[in-house]
Length: 195
Image (cartoon, rainbow, N blue to C red; front, side, top):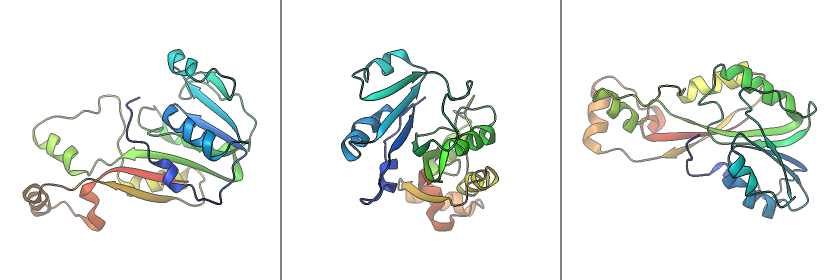
């Protein structure tokens, strides 16, 4: 999975307390989570043995597996927090994965994830030139992602945009071609969601 700038911990408030945390393939979050929640049990799933080995100090419970293909070895309502960037980007059925994660969350638990905005100006610019980088990837609009989460039994979805300013001339062209830019959506590269 392609790495992006980690920013999901911006959803975590200073008063939050998590006892059990699942990190899904996004190893970059582990050091910060260990520091912020020193008494929490942290679990990490990744299909990459080399990445797993970096955290073999015993402070993180590691599972070398592919969450897209295998049932997770945890009880229902086990985690306070599940965190991982782009967890629904390279999956066959995103709703199956979203529903699956919801089963592992406590009633008060949250899932922090992100998605690429298919309406981002850079994405549209590539399409205008005949390029599409999503051979096996799924991209979403903010509304589609929110609908997917609500259809997957999440009670509350909160999105925070990661903005990248568009060249003024290109943005003007896109709007003139009929692309609505509600809330500056054409300049949102990554959507971050708390579910």
